[in-house]
Length: 356
Image (cartoon, rainbow, N blue to C red; front, side, top):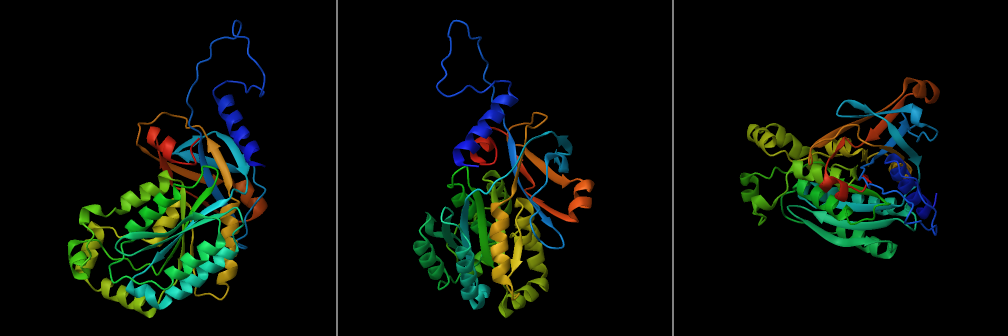
């Protein structure tokens, strides 16, 4: 379906949902005989849903609205839209630059270059790095030469600072918000999943100049990712130093105390919340898995519904998407990935690209 056709389809859906028939372009109205029309604002929540065969890990492409159930805060919703369209991607490559990543940073950079080769000409790329704070090396571009230079530069960088995951994810999701509404927003996070806790003690040891009140929390980063409709995926590779740091942290009771007080973020949690996935690059088929990841991200289902009940502005609405037993009898055991929810209200309606 072309871009114009997609826009017309969404517009027709919205008009139909409020009881207004779409009018052909160029058709004139009779001002004296046309009844007054009350224009209503309707939020259609559109959720990106990935469905994979559990055994083959291949996308399942033939599902219908009858094969899905969607729940908002436990209440089943009426599905008003189901499409499977290959939207262009807006990908932010987010590099962790800290000590434990340094032994595998070049390998992660090579992985990002491999992922780049699987993108299409219309897909756009941005490149960011982070430690205690985040830095944008390349804003969104379809110029592959610029993207390659930024990724190679990231692979050579190092910062002698703590690694604050939540700040990196927040800034990457914020950068993803600059992508167009008709694109799928994705962060491919390159890290070893060994965060530092943004406590005063850690900040003092590392000597970071970032003020504590300037750092975004895990809750801030989660909200930014959900409000911008950004899927967080991770390319994960560990070094011996990663294992050493994890062992030290597990034996430190103060670390566990600080971890509860200042949640540092985790790649698996972010993936689960946003409908993403985590790929470990130690396997021999890493390039094939990256190619599959890109294809799966591009061709998800768009499942839309009008919320059955009104909610307070700013309220977090939890979403659960399920497939029917009959679909699994037909297709085999299925894996369903979708974001866990969205924030209701005017702010969410304007900032979330998947709410129309």
